[in-house]
Image 1: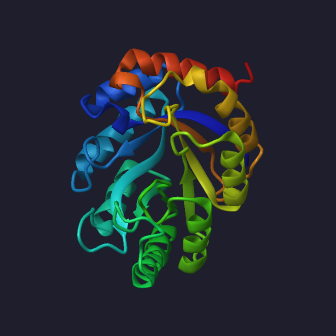
Image 2: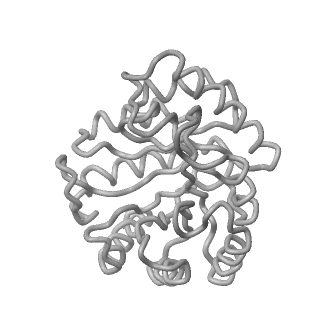
Image 3: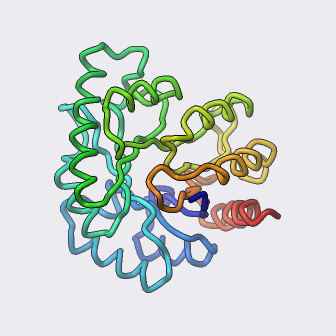
Length: 261
């Protein structure tokens, strides 16, 4: 399956209640939402998760994923995976996004012990999620154990479970050819995309200004089968000024690109 659908990360609008996020996503013609576990769908609020799921169904929006703050292998911070797994079930999420190791510790800085602990935890989490038909995906992010294609492939190999996948998002300032090489390397394990356009400094820009970067990448990813056999989402995240009008603009751009316009 090579479907690539437009979606939204709910954490783009942490200040808005779930109902407003749903209304905005539907207005923008998006197909699904990744719900954040920090604000909108908290792990202990099963009733809230079921209510969000019902409202999404009524609105015709898919639950793309449950974006948790579990830090695999870390015992210092993060959320409890058992709670997150139960919340994902209540939400009807087909995928859970987690973090590789403790945030702030890069793959280059991490000790062998740290990497092994993360791999062991990821194997256990992927196995538990698989029994419920839920896939497990790593946040692809600087200053984590999943901060590049080489680190990602090593960690997935060490975890040794077919239910473990990875997201991809661009590091600010990354060149197109490097991004293409990362995506090609990650293709057998590639779950969803986080989509945004930032300057190298981190300043947020309209997505349309990244056309020369994103359009060839989206075409490339659209041709890749999904490892979990379900649709893959291109999830808009962190629009300029956290402004709903910026989402309206960027969603139109993304939907046009995915429609070949």
